[in-house]
Length: 182
Image 1: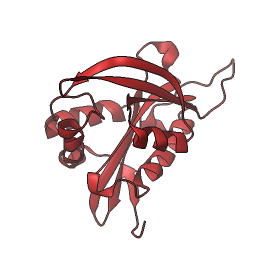
Image 2 (image 1 turned 90 degrees about the vertical axis):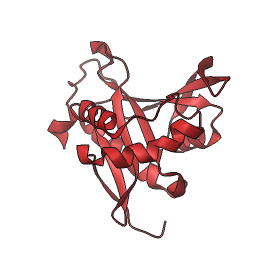
Image 3 (image 1 turned 30 degrees about the horizontal axis):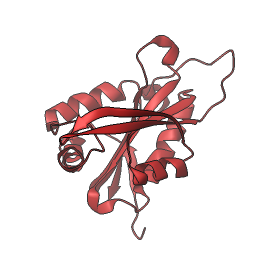
Image 4 (image 1 turned 180 degrees about the horizontal axis):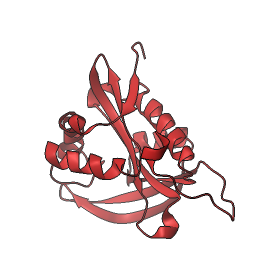
């Protein structure tokens, strides 16, 4: 990477650019199982919902957002509070340049401070780039679901990958919302 990358928390004003980054993933790939590109206003709602409890980060080069990563609840039940699902999307022209790794490292640091123990990633299978990226980041495959999503007139498998980032003591510390850690 021959340029500097600034990582900062996402803001509602970033919604339009994040929607632009996400659009080709929706329209041209099975990396996401969404059919319609969310509007900037829908992206605003999603950002607002996530940042109330979890980190949502953007990566900026030369004044332009080129990627984003966030964590979300793994499941809604109280006992899952220490597990989070992670996602990362990079502008198609900037993939493979280390931006995703920078985002994930900072995301993990923040999630550790929130007392999150487990990170989970849901990945369309096959997807050697994403699986390789997550393996490089320390994730391991824990489940493979067959024909789980239907997109572009075909059925697609998915895998779950996980990574432990904190110990699992019997007297677990409480979950701390992101806004209290930032």
